[in-house]
Image 1 (cartoon, rainbow, N blue to C red):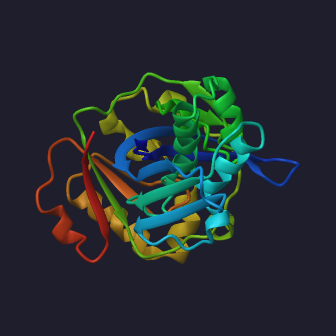
Image 2: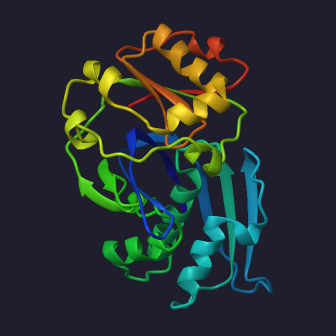
Image 3: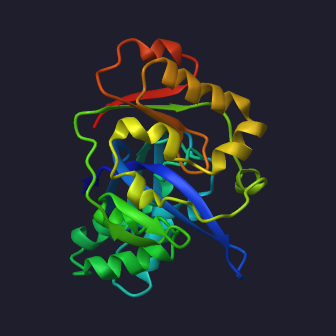
Length: 273
């Protein structure tokens, strides 16, 4: 069975307060985009190994046991009868990009196993399982635009469609650590909630839809800030870093011709929403 885990972007991201457990509460909008990995599971009932993981595409720098798709399989295997399997994963979503590639792979793995082996798990059960794998994993179970709060794990449905727009995603060869991203963050509640901002026309987002991480990340990695400005110079109606980076996206009204040349030395994808 084959599935196609997709990426997401963050539309705005406000760090609202620091929690007593050391984490931070935030608010953002998760929006699914058609940038996809490929994931296939083949039962291997006569294998002596619990699983085998075969990866292609963008290199995955982790041991198989640490991969979220393997963790998803083992999580379900604790309570359900699952055979040994062979896992084939082609990575197209870059890691460390703030686009949830690993979280999406894990969530889609749960959904794939549920369907392929007829576990009859409900959406609520799948979301509960996915939350234990990562804060934003549960988003990819229903995979619809949501307003996210808490640590990115409390969702409210929203009415939002970017259909007809063109999305350009650029990922420089830069790794942004969580520590870096939070290094200059001063938590504060926004004057206007992102939930209210995204109801306004997209053309008004530029000045009011903010990603709080950009301030600290652009200081340490100015190239990421330059990419954002280049997207605006190319005609983007709105541009932002996604999550804590390092990918930057621009939303364009029309098809963008030749923009890949501008970012020819970096990962660049042009997507029709």
